[in-house]
Structure formats: C-alpha cells, structure tokens
Amino acid sequence: KNGTIIDGTGKPMFSGDVGIKEGEIKEIGDLHSEQADKIIDATGQYVTPGFVDINNHSDTYWRIFLDPDLPSLIYQGITTIVGGNCGSSLAPLVSHDNIHSIQKWADIKQVNLNWLRMEEFLNEVERKKLSVNFATLVGHSTLRRGLIRDEVRGLNSHEMKTMKKMLTQAMKEGAIGLSTGLVYTHAKRSEEHTSELQSHSFISYAVFCLKKKIYKITCV
Image 1 (cartoon, rainbow, N blue to C red):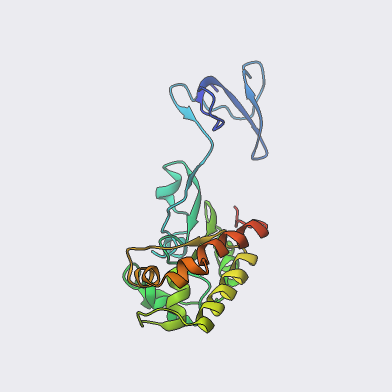
Image 2 (cartoon, rainbow, N blue to C red):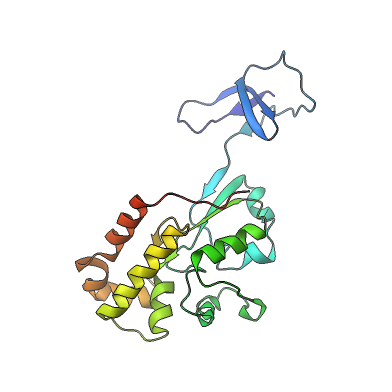
C-alpha cells in the first residue's frame, strides 16, 4: 500500500495500492478499505513492473548454472534477462568443443555440457529453476566458429547454407533472434565479406525467421 506506482504504460507515476492474490496482480488503485493477509507499507518506495535486461551475459559467464538464484539481478528489480548477446550464445553448438569460445569469461573446466540444440539448452535452463525469466538470442559468432573453428575467413556457400539451417532450427526451438558483435574477430571477418551479412542478408533472414515463429520464453 501507499507506493508510488510506475506501471510501464508511459503515464505519470501515481500513489496507490497493489492487490496481489496467488502470485498475480488483481487490482491497482485505492484499496485502503480492502482486507489482506499480509500488507507491505511501500510509503516512499517505487512500485514498478520487473525490469528486462536485454544485454545480459549471465549465460556466457556461466552464472545461470553456478548461481541460478541470480541475487544481484533480483536486488535490482530485474525479472527477465536476454542472453546470447554480442554474437556469443550457449546454443546451438556444432559440437561440444564449441564451448571453448567462452573460455575467456568462464572456467570451462567446470563446464559439463549435455546439449547441442537450442531446445536441449533451454530444457536444461528450465531445470535450473532460475529466479528470473530467461530468453536467448542465437550468437552469430557461435554459429560461425562452430563451422570453421578458429579459421578467420569468409564462409563458402555450403557453410552459409548450414548456418542458416542452424539458425532456423534454433528459432523454431525457442531462440528469439540473432545477435552479432562486430568488434570481435569472427564478426569482423564476416563484415568484410558482404555476401555473408549483406548481399544474401543473413540478418534480414534472421528477422524473417523471427516474424514467422511463435515466441517461447523459459519462465519461472
């Protein structure tokens, strides 16, 4: 009760109460005459929807597995995170060796993979029962490095076709889009080869796939 409510619609903040029943918001407004089993006095506090962190790296830093409660996010009011950013995602993988691409961010000696496909990865995340909602992009460099490993070159037509197929399948299985990081080696190389990111427009292809799919987010 008595909180300053910012409801996320863009309208001005206002003072009011929020009625919650069985984990769901049932009413917002002046509820001073209502009865409740538990009342939290939010005087002087902001009451808002949970924040969405769209540029999160808790996946590639392995935090979603080492500390699935993710308290540092919860304490900031973050309730949804999007992983797979900056061209690096944990799925889909061509082989288990692809996990070495995150070795600069996580101790891969602690990593035990039981997935390759996006669906398998999201199922594993769901089993961890994260304290926040989780969605992921497909990392462009993850796809690229999976196919040509540490070679730094343009892709041939067969590799490009394989990469598109992997992207399509990953998005059907729950990914919400494609990410790239043009400052990193593999993405820099693809930028030099316009046939990969422009002429046959791999990014536009990803948007096309996104428009055709139904969103699936692993939720708490």
